[in-house]
Length: 340
Image (tube, rainbow, N blue to C red; front, side, top):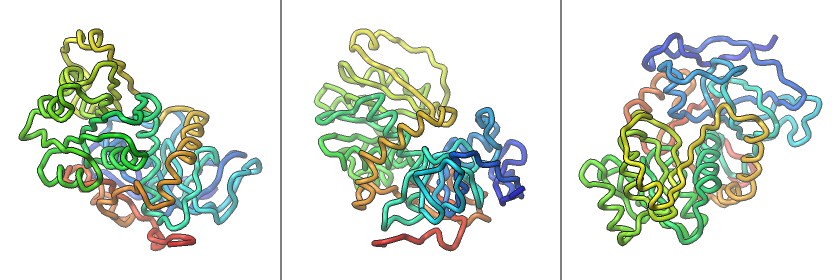
């Protein structure tokens, strides 16, 4: 049985509970690949799992990590899309914080030439989430305005860049400091609101000349439910992807009716492979060409070596990061192929 060094949480708690241990590599199926992981993105769900608030879905291992980039080492008997030596990025239900991982071929995407493993490792979780929730479920269209909360988060930095790179979308971001607002503008946001010094509802109305944004992407939760409903435009869509500050609130739902609002929400981790595969094909069509052209690339806040995974989580917990925090498993994590 093949083993691999992997990161688990030894109990629930802070970054100090993270441990690097030897774990058996899951037995690959006929449509699976064994991938040598070079880089893995760190995401808020990883923190929640470490804290004991987000258990892996049934059948998934307790090894942390939802996104990875690496090199295919071996393929199952029915794999047709990739071969050993190929560079891939992938969204997984668990197991990305490891030297090797088992990946279903249908959820993997070829890494564009010129993109490093570190950049590629920061793509799957946020780009899959943004495409699914903003462009598919909420239907952000040409000529519309998006308001994204947490503009300097991994999700926020992704949606700002993708929305602007696709053209025709106006983006307003909220952030918790003037410095972070400046970072949002540098990423391409048309406007940024410091929610600590201004009422984002009043500012949102002003910036849209009283109309409100067509789409709001929110991960804050309860404190923003009413404000989002008050601000959203007629026939607007609110996409909820997390509840960082709670999922329960006493709110007035009247605007839902009067404004004909659509509220939608989803999670990706426990969804079936077929659904993730469909999203992977959508990214290949709409987003990967942008990344191949070095547009809408993930914003990399910091990179930590595998052995410093606790420090990487400490950085995430501190909340001062701008963009993605990435774990580098190998010295080759900075490497590119063809054109880099």
